Length: 382
Image (tube, rainbow, N blue to C red; front, top):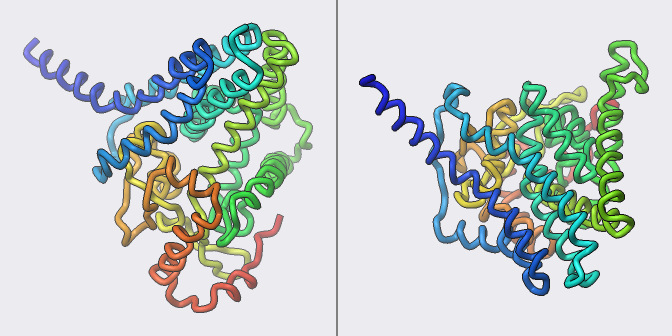
């Protein structure tokens, strides 16, 4: 009995520490404000997601505190719960909007598109990000929730590409998602859309081949991917007709664009050292851009602590560590600002190219001619 007050106090402490990461839930009613009121209100979702969090980052600054990475998972209940409830909440919101918006007389066609652009901002900024957290877990339920979230944006192969290709080959020519130095986003984006799908399928096919199974084997997750995506396409058609289907594509395209903008920022210009024979050095914190902006890390559940995520991929988001400049390169701003900059290549190069060159001098001073070095890098065999 005497321990009860201390147990309650500890539970409240853990809940209060986790609550800022629940801020993403506020985006769902914001979406509905735009859908119900129409007009300029449809801009509220992107304004809140991109610009409000940029302002909050500037106002409240950085968080460089690190949790104990050995924290028991039982103490992470409130952190995990928000990722577990997000998939049904996003699915309910998306399906309800697919029914409501095509029948809303107060919304013009342009306003309807605007609502689903906002939905795509949410399903990309939050939904795919939560899927990313869930797909890294061994728990089958969490991995299935990730598949559902990715199916909602028609990008189910991201799980295979991310786990089997990106994490293994990040910072090398074999990784489609590592943005090359001086590669603008508008060249990167179509390349990644094409190459990541192909590399994901090849990776799954290779895994099956090692077990003497054809790619058509039912254990190939692409069958699940296609079934889930077809389900959401059918629901969009049933709920909203042809208009609903078109709006669903608007949402999915916006979400994928958001994801690949973030992918572009996370590794731009960073390469692992080629050691010969198709081998590269082990992944280290230096091979991802790190950011410690507090507010955007609340929204993105510490995704910006990306250096540690690649260094220790199995860590849950509240335990991800941040690093000093001596260990990992630092972005000057959080993702909301950096993704906007990435859309304007001259601004991006002006901000980031000097940082890439400084990174090269800091971590690889022995490489004097990077053009020659990159030309002689040998892609890993397929």
